[in-house]
Amino acid sequence: MPARITVCYTNQPAVESFLYEESDYRIGRSKECELILEHPTVSRQHATVANLNRVWQLNDESSRNGTRVNGLAISTSTLEDDAIISIGKLDCLFESKSTQQIQAIQSHNNWRLSASKPGIKNITVNLKQNLLSQLQNLIMLTGTQRGGVFLGNTLQSLSVCITQGLSGKDFKLNNFEGSIGAISQCYSKGEPIIAMDITHHQLLSSRQSIELKKISALACIPLTYEGSIIGVIYTDSKMSGKVLTELDLEILTSISLQIETTVQAILLQQSIELLQSQLINSSSFDGNDYNLFKLCH
Image 1: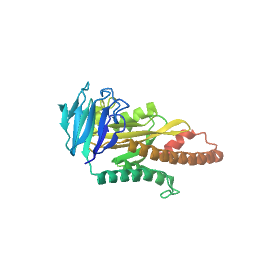
Image 2: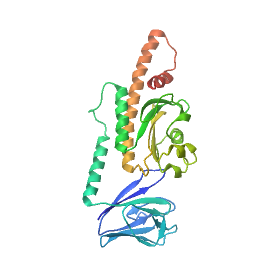
Image 3: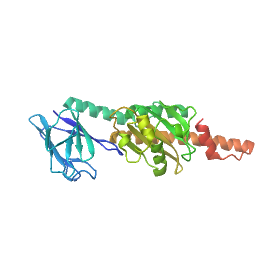
């Protein structure tokens, strides 16, 4: 029977691979391996996995940091379904799958990717409604549980624009239900933050809020306007064992670009309204602050 192996990184998307019968797979950091694991605790050729007589068998190849199955060090082990394989300090989920199940997974993944692409089916003249639909689509297609769009030129000025499953009432960043650390990193780095099993994340695990909130996986994507960060998209899940894969990152990237375009359209629309107001009232109010404030309320 074929199998799926999911390599779970703490600070980057998980990597899914399918294993087929009558094949041997080398696991390690070397580019020559069939399953490449990019982590310093993984040896160049760390282990091998093969299907022998309809049974999957894992062998450690005298690796520096060892191989474990369900927490036990092994040199050779028969793999049962839902086994946790530890290659160095990377955990991998092993699952037996029928050919039909693999085909169904791949078909579903193709549908998820297709559904994340921009289209005109659900676009309305109400830009705020479009924003909510895009956020809901992001949560559904990534399998997370909640999320929001937050706007502000700085971390300190961050305000709620729109949320799904998160409270936006009386929003203050220090009372945020999600990961303040992830949003802070997103602002400082200006790039997407992907994290899973957050209690082991190098930069986020020290935050007591993560332990208290029991967040297991999250993503935070920056929003930009005219070259500057104006906010973030945040989504997370409390489901135990939840992973965000490379496909999920592709979906997040696709929908975040749509959300960014919608936000920019709203800001442009409000800039025009502001200009009209200035012409009528000779207002000297700061346009950028006004736009973000109005969009968030």
